[in-house]
Every structure is written in C-alpha cells, then in structure tokens.
Image (cartoon, rainbow over all chains, first blue to last red; front, side, top):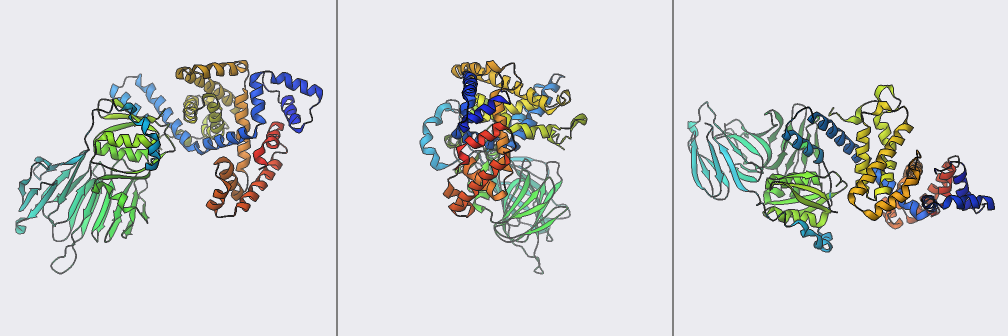
Length: 416
Length: 193
C-alpha cells in the first residue's frame, strides 16, 4: 500500500511524541508488518540515517552541473544514434562513441596514498604488456623549396644550405641555423618549418641564436635569415623560447614577434618579445592560449586586447571570447616541466592529464564520464614506457586502464 | 550555441522547461536511484540516461507531476535491469521483495523518502549565508567542529551557536509544512546537536 498522507505520518508523529493511543498503536503495528513500511519507519525515525541521507543528497546537489553535462552528452549521443540508421559510416559510429565518452573527469593522485594500494595495480598488467616507448627527439623539417627531411638524433651533420645559411643537425636533437653570408639575403625571404608529431620533441637554434624548444605535436615557421627590422616566427602547439637580445646598428632593439596560428592558419595571438624566456602553450584542443614569462617582458595581443606581462606571470587568452587575463603567482616549474622531460600535475583534471600523456606517447584514451570529482597531482618522468605511467596513475587514483582497440587506445574507467 | 539542451526555453508553451524539471528533480531522483543500486556514480548515470529519454518527449506531459511519475517509473526499471546485469543475485532478490508490493502505486516509499530528504535539504539552503555554511560543513561535509572553526576563522563556540540557531530556524520553517517533515525534524537528533 502507499502511504496514507493523513493517517500514517500522523501516527508516526504520535509515536515519536509518545502519545499513541491503543487503537492508533494497533493501526501502526498493522502497517509496520510490511517489511518495506518497517524500513521506511526505521529510516524516518533514525537520526543517523537522516544525517547520512542529507549528506548523500548534498553530494547529488553538488553534482548538478556534472549531471547536466552528462544528460547533454547522452542526448547528443541519442541523436547521433538515430542519424546512424539513415546511413553513416562505421567511422562516424566510432567517432560518436568517442565524443560521448571523452569528457572531462577528474581524479586525485597522491603519492602517499599509493603505498596501501599496491596489491591492486597489476590486475591488467597482461594487457599492457606490449609496452609503448616514450616520445623522443625527432621532427620533420620542411625547407623553403618544399623538401622534407626527417630529423633525429642519429643523423648529425650539415643537412642543407638555404640562402647563405647552413643548417646543421646536432647529435643531441638540436637543429642549428648558421648565417654564413648575410649579404646573400635578397628580397626573397626563405622560410623553413620544423614540425613535431605526437611523441616527438626537438630544439632549434634560430639564425639570430635564439633557441626554441618544441613540444610534441607542435611546429614553428621561421625565415632562414631574419631581417634587420624585426624577427618574426609562427608557431602551433607548445614551444619554449629563449630569445637573444639583438640591436640594430643605431642601437635600437630588433623586436622578436611570435605569431600563434590556429588550425586554419589565422592569427590567434601575437606575442611581442621585449625580453628573454617564455613558454607558449597554444594547442588547438585547449580552451586558451597561455603565455608564461620567466624572464624579461612580453606584450601579448590579439585583434581586441593588448596586455603587458611581467616575469612569473601568465597571459591567458580565452579563445572563445578573445579576452586576455593575466594570472599571477604561476607555478613556473609546472609550465616548463615538459622541457625538463617530466609531467607535472597539480590538481589537474584527468582530461588535462591524458591530453599530455596522449601527445607524448601517441596514444589515445576513451574516458568514462562517471569518473567525476577527481583531480590528479604528481610528478612523473616522461622517459619511462607508457605502462609505468599508467601504473602510477592506476595505483593511486581509483581508475583503471584497459586496452580499447589495437595497441594504442585505452579506456579509462573507475576501479570496480 | 552548441546545442545545449538546457538553454532551450520552455517548450510548446508548457509552463515548465526541461531545465526547470531537471534542476528540481535531479538530486532526489539520484538519491532515489542510489537507494536502489547503492552506487552514487551508477545512480547518476542511470538518472542522466532517463532524463535523456525524457528529452524530446516533453510535450507528451501535461504536468510536472506526470513527468515525475514517468521518471520514477523508468528509473526504477533501469535500476532493476542494472541490478540484473550486475548479477548481484542477493541484492536483486532483496530488491524485488522490497519493491514489488508497490509496483501498482504511483509513488513508492523510497521515492517518497527521497523527496522528503530533498525538501529538508532545501530548507537548509534557505538559512542565512554564514549559518548555512557552518551547518553544511558540519553536517553535510562531515567536517569536525574544530576544523570548521579553523577553516572559517571563527571560534568553535560560534560554530556551535550557528548550528543551534540553524536548527531552531529549521524547526520554525517546518511548522506549517507536512506533518511527515515535521516529524523528521523532531526525531532527527542531528538537529538537537
């Protein structure tokens, strides 16, 4: 039977007050003979239960935003599934599954917590047996005439000459431009492009002796010889710059300008360098472009705003609005960790974490949305095979990785 | 702009939008589902799935009450099939024993209970800001009183005072409400601190 809104609550109330009449007690006892009623009665009169219940409710209220996203994803997926029947390819099915599954989630990683949980780590070690090596010094250089040269640390030596500039590949994963004949540069400026894929990194010493470190899945386009008026390069992805100050004959500084391009080749941001060391993170799958200054001064601008940044600060350009914020007290070690060959996470969302891992190991992940509320903190060297990284994450975070498809894709789900 | 269903205004002249319905029903439906499947994440996933089913069917319903009954019904079914899939035989049997007598009613006790808890929760939300903060930290986030005092930079006695006053206000707030709600307040020791 359902609750009689009038009698039963009244009886329960009387019971609590200790004012039940004999007749009422009989009615209540009769009602309580059903186990489900008994449970309800016990719950409603048990303060510990109610405390528990309110805390549970509170947790769901706090998750309202997540729930909203989850519903949106499911609606989108439903709509996609419908469209499937009207004839789309298998590739689209796969893509839509990925879209549904790969959304932000958070997990907490803590080195201290790990010790007690080691027993559970190797459960799917068998599956991860075929290990994936970390990224390495490798890149593709595209010369002005369109020729492409694959660079790696195994092939040192001079690899080309472009308009009075020698291009030398060093043994330690560094490309060097040596201007030997400055007068040779006529009206035609020759441009080269250095490009890394997932799992690759490279360094280049530009013709003005400025150094650039390229992270995975990034590129830089530059002239083989800079003009006397300005030095200008274009980048995509993430790069660290150490700019050599340069003065013209009259003593005026030659500005160094970094243009950030989006995937369509349009300029999203321009950084005018007045000083020396900075990092730009402009991956296309990030919400914003961050320019972190270590030394000197930079001016960050787009069509809308111009912002001057001081050392230790980070310019954050929001792609959606074009606004530029300045973040102070930035964790510099974290920003440049990639250059020192480690991952540094500090309460980062799992989405952020796996994006970095995916770029460096050239793998991809399918994330189970249920893993919400979790963030990840920790430092891990990135010269280890993938299994070590995943192991470390599994060990402490309550998530588990499984092979999804082929060798290079993994699912992430909550640990059962 | 990216077809976010929650930005759609009330459909077809209905006095309630998908968003309204979601905001109002989501927490307690999750609570309800959790009481059946005993996993918070699973419960939220099931509820989200059911809201996704509801979307696009909104104009089939005349009132929020109808929607509520529909959601409770499909959530119950989803929970049953989840438990079946989990092959948690014992749990499943228990569940069936527990739930079957109510199958023809429009409301079940666990759902009713979930609603009561949400009403209670909403009353807490109406407390004055500082008091609410103290109360939530102490009772809902389960942070020890001394820790709450330290976090908010107030004395433990102030924490105690806020909580006592909060309970008094809750009792007053509930004076005119459902008897069942009242009895919770009276019986609930947490409000007596």
